Length: 231
Length: 378
Image 1 (cartoon, each protein chain N blue to C red):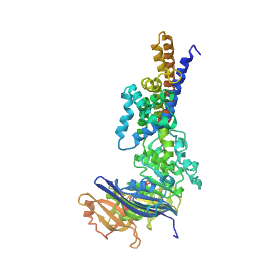
Image 2 (cartoon, chains in turn blue, cyan):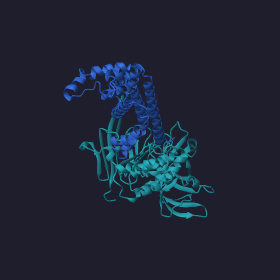
Image 3 (cartoon, rainbow over the protein chains, first blue to last red):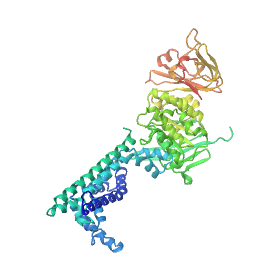
Image 4 (tube, each protein chain N blue to C red):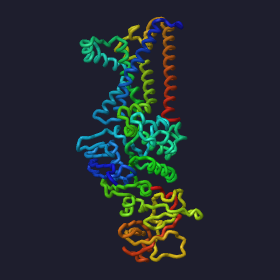
């Protein structure tokens, strides 16, 4: 198709699969953590905040290696998952999704947290006096108001997972057809003799994907922002 | 009177904030129709009391009964959660939902509550009662303060409440906006069969709107009774903080003097002329008398432009060496059925006339000072 080889299209497909699964599975967790940080006071809040932001300052290879220690076949959690559920994450696309999600997580949490901090919690109180219980008040009032923040977070996160390299190659390796996402395929192409034309085509695919995501998010957030803020 | 349905509020709570302890201990029982005002200076615990009633705060002790329904009674482990109480709450800062249109805000409570029985609480009726027709499709971002507050009131009413709480709904508005909203609030009181608790530190609003008055100071109810009774008896100015002592007189329209643009009322058996009202003879009205609008004379003055000269006797004198003015309480009723009003004169004038308790006096009130802003339906 359009002169792309099956390997290149496969890399695109794996990239999309990894990033989209990452977004949908991380979304609830990011909401919960953002809500905790924005609304609640508890012991160890500063520590939680630091841990979440760690991937921003630590090299992704370190994250990947930590994941190997934790979730590898002999890892603390990994051996348990392997023995009891026969789940192995290393060298699988699911593992690639986990690696990318951990690295990009702070980018998802931060905009949601900022949006939540901008919502007057007393609006939920007003909703409760109108008959909504706590859950309904959150869903009917706070959630729609923070929607632009959620979309911004989801996009930043999506873009970051698309570009994830270090943690993915460390934890999930570079296996064509399984864990080889666009950046990993690009890396492989640059290492192989005569891979320049493949590399260029992969660069083109990456750029198209990123631009598409940026434009889509701009359009979505403008639409929701107008609805919420009226200007 | 028979067995009247009552609104009963009893609440007790201790708030400990560092070394400070604020104690709230308030109970009162009012007929469950009409407006009960809770009056007190800021920090008296008014908003706290409202939050306890709404269930947004859970105090040590609380009992709330509206008509025959017990909403909570901590002694008997009865606790209806706030979202199931159907107690409407109009906040001072409106708290409209920014992501919804005016109509979306108004309809918000509908999906969580049973539909209203009475046609007075239908969407169309509330919208027209509050004059919101032209605003429905707008967002809430470019509304005036008065419009925002009317929408907040409509939103609370459309959730089909059994009791409406209003927390200083006019406090954040400038005088023009206030006089724009007051008629709507009066309309509410007349057309809805819904008890209202109205919190305010503004005596003038209370005199105009409320039937019952609870005076709250430092978390305690200092007095409770009809507005006429409490404003005539107590000097509330120290609590109001704005030097506002005033009286509400209950009166009846007797006749219109169309050629002069005046209306004759009867208050405490005495005639009272006010600027012309658009109300039929027989209508019951309340007249808000500001003490600075009332002068005193020892003899009935002749050849004077003041139209209202009411005979009475001095019941009490409130003077303080720090203030250049003296507030004088005059009984214009009989000794058996006293009707009190307050007059404010300078200390110099009071000394020159040697005013003393028990002295017969004439209270002079200019008819022009009693215009539409001071006289309303009761």
